[in-house]
Length: 77
Image 1 (cartoon, one colour):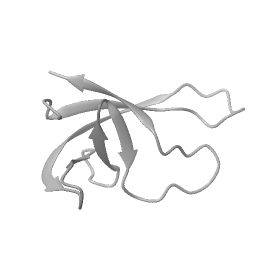
Image 2 (spheres, rainbow, N blue to C red):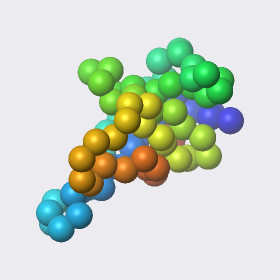
Image 3 (tube, one colour):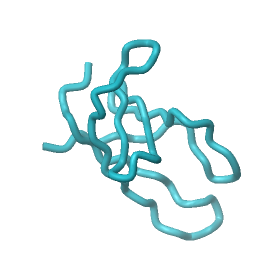
Image 4 (cartoon, one colour):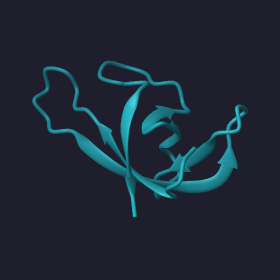
């Protein structure tokens, strides 16, 4: 069960692109998924994930190279 209302999500760079990973801060939205998991979103509301066991899964279907469906989520105070 999630106990934090904010998480830092690490988005890896595109393979072969030599770019550093990007960190996105998400917060609880008060919404839940069909499975009852809390929904988290970035400040703009465009990057939305569900988080379970410190694993973030994007709610939108990833597209294109370098997109990941399983991301590390670090709880924040």
